[in-house]
Image (cartoon, rainbow, N blue to C red; front, top):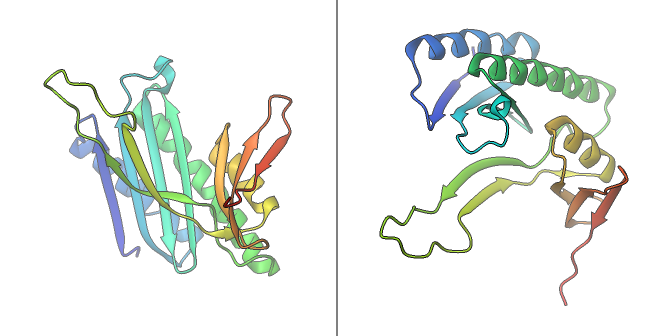
Length: 189
């Protein structure tokens, strides 16, 4: 059995019914990959989403020895968002297992959000700081092809930060307007 399933709710109340539903379905992931050590699920309601169909968000992070996989899905109904994230996670697990069996790569996945530190909201009417949200994440080493694949799998449409193992540097992959990709290679000046 998986050592730990952690379910968190943001901007919503997590009902016992929803918790049981998520735990029951999440427990089945171990059938696909025995090495899972921890599963973190965050369910949230985004009041400020542009479309009503994007208001319910389900994020899932699966960790084990030497790997971390992450999905995020949005829908107009919480269970639908979670089910889509779970399906996407099962596909990622199968891809990870296939890579590991073929001996390609080291089985590590993309940079994943681990912890968020949100700035407190100022209730006195004072100006808020320019940086309203900070995120910390673990960057896993990968090559450019793996970064493009992870960007597609995670549904990141704008950019993706990764550690290029071949060049020993942090780089930013981004999607250009014409559909191709660009790569930012920072250099200290």
